[in-house]
Amino acid sequence: METFVQLIVNGLGKGAVFALLALGFVIIFKATEVVNFAHGSLVLFGGYLVVTLRESIGWAGAAIVGVVGAGLLALAVERLLLSRSKLADPFSLALLTIGVDVIVTEEIVRRLGVSLPFIGDAWDAQPVQVGGITLFRTHLVALVVATVLITLFFLAFRYSNWGIAMRAQAENKEAAALVGIRSGRVTATAWLVAGLLAGVAVLFIATQDFSGAGLSRGTHSIALAAFPAAILGGLDSTAGAVVGGITVGLVDALATHYVSFAFAKSAVFLVMLVVLVVRPSGLFGTRETIRV
Amino acid sequence: MLTVRDLTVRYGRSVAALHGVDLDVPDDGVLAVLGGNGAGKSTLLRTISGTLRMHRGTVAGGEVRYGNRRIDQLDPAAIVGLGVVGVPEGRQVFARMTVAENLRAGAIGAPASKRAEAQRRVHDLFPVLAERASQRAGLLSGGEQQMLAIGRALMSGPRLLLLDEPSLGLAPRIVQRIGATIREIHEQGTAVVLVEQNAVMALDVSDHAVVLEVGGIALAGTAAELSASEDVQRLYLGGHAESDAAAERQVAEARRQRAGVRRLSRWGG
Image 1: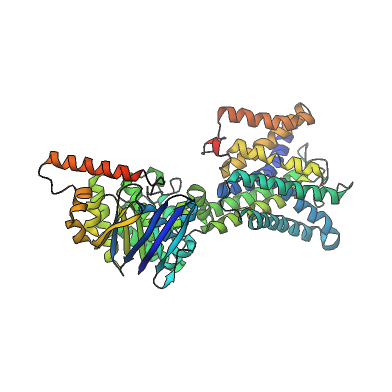
Image 2: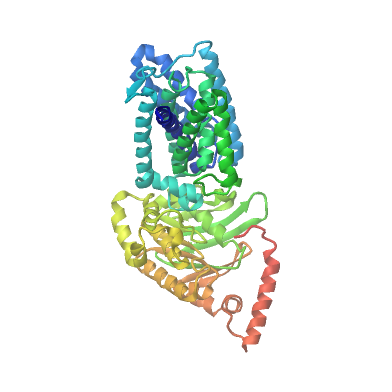
């Protein structure tokens, strides 16, 4: 029983991080219909800034630069590459993001060389005991941070002008343009926010607690689990991204413990497949799958 | 207020959807644009509101001016900023958002100080939108959705409103109501371009009118002149027939003629 509670809490912690990534994925898709395959490289880029800068400006400063940096990289990808090809269809733009992903990822992996630096200095590898249950501190911090950020996101999405403009554009681009919503601005902020969230996520992923590995190509492949998370939640549903992220976290934690570490990765995709068989547009998705 | 001169518009490299179109919307006037499917009516509105590019269309010649300003190369948001706002064909409300959120979306292009006033005006015109403020727009009836689409456009306080077939698919009683609303909006000082297939309603609320046919202006004049014109009566109003049967024959004949013409313009207007 104690093991089970421990697994659930840890799964939720992991899930919260996947939710941050999946949310970014989903808002980019909602604003532009582009599937952003470069999400993993945004994660790596934020992490890379943290590990290179923390010696000189301290962990907290480096973390802030990392988060902002990942946001700005996402913004740059949108402004410099995607927004220039306004009439290109979302498929070609998705392929473009694969190109960005390969370039950024390979360069960072090359720079890292053989080092695999851990990021979560402030909390990593210091388990806490709660009533005889051992919990990873990283997961608890991640859970708190993600809850705050996701709540803020949903408040903004529901009540702010930005949220109204985002939803209006996601639903009907032409009608949104006709009432004076600037589609370029909406798209740019969607990418910026997605990048910021990716920058936050990496602070938890490249830790002893989360992955047992530092910043490396492995970080990138872990971040890719946000993809099944977003898909099983429904690629155009923000609530679905959160539910999908949590699901992936829980499946990952349970499968690792009860089956094997190697099986956990496939388990996540198996769950995604099962969901897609039952609900082709994901748990909360509304659009026909043909658009994906 | 709005002048269109020698406007030619193409989609891709195809036949021009509009060629050599001239028209004027007088200050505070209502201009009706009549014509069948594929005549270029929607293309004309897309050009004015700047959404032509979203349909891969380009202005191949001529210009559109609002006041002294040339607007045919501006983006839609800039055009809304100048006070020219469009209501798309088929209403296109944001169905998954509430009525209140739809109206808020309409106000995004306008200064925040004007919002309360605009909202009051819209609620005065369409009390039903106040009653249903928290309902999803997709749950409204067709007529209510049309009111919401017009209300949403009015939220930015436009000086020129572009309406694309507001009567489409609505019951006659609702069409009358929409017509009365257009007149009211006009009386409050907003000029209107009304694109319609329902010529009776359109000529009733407008003071000037043009007839578009296969991308060009076929007839132009005051609404009274066009109402009296035999072509308009035959094609759009169905009058001057000696009997009902004759009227039906004439309409069928006119439809056949127009169907032949329609095939030339592949892109729906």
